[in-house]
Length: 577
Picture (cartoon, rainbow, N blue to C red):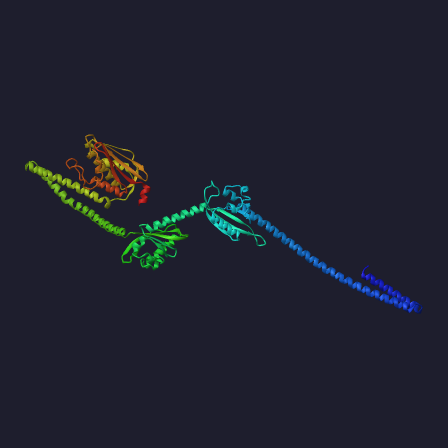
């Protein structure tokens, strides 16, 4: 029964007592009514106390319920966080396990007694053992190297220990270079629980390091003892080192050079120092900078010309720039003298050609007059002045005619460059045909037979090609033996040029005369045996040189001679031009 229902019933009883008293009046004892009323009041008071207690109880229950709800929420949050932590721990353990197993380095865990409790996949492979062989082994019992033992003891004392060196895991194994790290592992209480050993096979890296050190030693040896000047500089242009050759070339002691910037050196004037800085700047973007020329000033004031280049080198763990230099002062002086001499020779040659042309041209007219009068004298007075006079007149006529031929050949020689025509594509076959026609009388008198293969189209001066063919064929007819001359001309492609050959069956040329036959006025035979001016083959050589080719001969004395010459093909000619 609720508190409200008790109150209602109490109020009903109280009403019934009042009603009874009103009806009975004096018939009821007063004391009875007072007792009933007092009892009712006590009951009401108790009911009020009960009601109040019930309210207090309800309030306490409500408060307790709220606390329980809050506790439940807190517990749920703690459970959720615990699940997150457990998931993270599981994920972390999985990641660690993956790293542990897949690490290329060998890893082993051991307890505080040194007993191996876990190994990863790589360690057995590195040591040539199985996982089962390693599990349970005592690390301290397997260590023989004192320094490795010291690193292990550091770990067991709570500090990280390191060791590296050559070691053979087994008696039959080949020594390899190892890097080992011993790291302590602590329990939650802070006490040492064991440790982790990480082993890495660094043999390849060690070999590379030793090779690099050996290379650096060789570099240092070459640097110090090299005959050419070598400078090591950093990217700012500060000299790190110089070799003995730099000291000898500059006249400055090493102490006054090392540690200074290029622009601080008295050996390099300001513009030259800036060029040296730019040389290093170019090298940063390339494996090597282009060679540049510098003028330096020695300590004694003399100037020297050097060529320098630079390229980056790795030395002592940093990138430096090796500047190599070479003293080219004498070479430049020689080149300058050679240029002056070449210019003088060119001027002399031009003047000589001009003189030869002018002299030859100016000599022709009086020579023609002399020749004409001498020939007229021979016609009119032959056999009238006596045999001796006839002989003298004949000698003068022959000399005048020979001088005419000599002047004509000199003119041809001087005109090869001065009167040459433009190079154009030219069919060599028709040019050869014209040369044969021009020599028709000589060919007929000698009973010569001329044959030729199909000749190509070449880029040339047509008139000079005609002149070349005529000289070579005329020589083949002139220097014949007892057999009738047989001359054959052919051509074939040879890489980027055309090779022409003119072969005869004449007297041949000894090999020791290979250099003389193309020199002007050089004769191998007397004029009485083989008449001529000694200029023909010199003209041929000059024509071929103008065409960027070369000419030579191959001969079997007494049997045959083959003159060969080359001219560039269309593509090569375009390149040369």
